[in-house]
Amino acid sequence: MTLGYPLLARGKVREVYAVDDERLLLVASDRISAYDAVLPTPIPDKGRVLTALSVWWFDQLAPVLEAHGATHHLISADDVPAEVAGRAMLVRRLAMEPVECVARGYLSGSGTVEYQRTGAIRDVALPAGLVEGSRLPEPVFTPSTKAEVGEHDEAITFAQVVTTVGRPRAEALRELTLALYRRAAEIAEEAGIILADTKFEFGTHAGGLVLGDEVLTPDSSRFWPAVTWSPGAAQPSYDKQYVRDWLTGSGWDRTSPPPELPEGVVAATRERYVTAYEQLTGTSFV
Image (tube, rainbow, N blue to C red; front, top):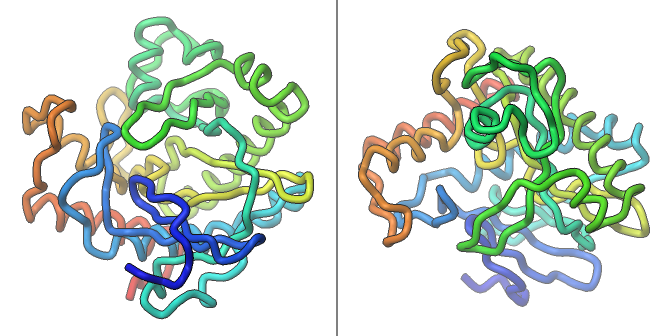
């Protein structure tokens, strides 16, 4: 695709174009990744859902950002080339922080695996007796490395974040991550959705912290229907866990090229993404 801008990067899901010295164009594709691999089968409308939901969340979370002296990177989702309308955002250029800021309010996924082995997630000790899907006493900050395409994110300790970015910035990232998670979890709960965990990415602009990338989408978060929440097993979800589960059952070894997704898995995954958007925002996905 030629948009008239230089292509800076191609990630698992997005392309990043340089508009000028101050602005970038982020274009979300319909690609889907799982277990650090980009799958060969796209999910129709996925890029539009990711973009529309991110734009909605940026608006919802603006007061939290302002209260912490921060902002977000979105400039416009309308002033974009026609050929990528609906799945592109014009954003500020940022100097990105080299860590992924993960907030967890429930035990799930890799967090469960580590908790079962150590009773903690890295340096965050947790109470005994938790199971998959348990609500944590308080949301916790469990950062990770920011891996390149094809590499694995790895959980790191808060001390490692301090070493990487310095204590003042590390504490600011932790405080803002948890504040954003708490507010987003409240909004999701009002819509009948549990926000189990999510990942934020931050950068700086003019010295201030800026929330960047995508925000609280089914790609970066675990969304569970509140009505079916039942700790002790994997939870039904409105995210790409459905695809991960199918891949696990398919026998794929996670090293060879990933298999094509069946039509039924594609349709069911699209339905989950659209449902997440409609239930959270209260508007129809058109």
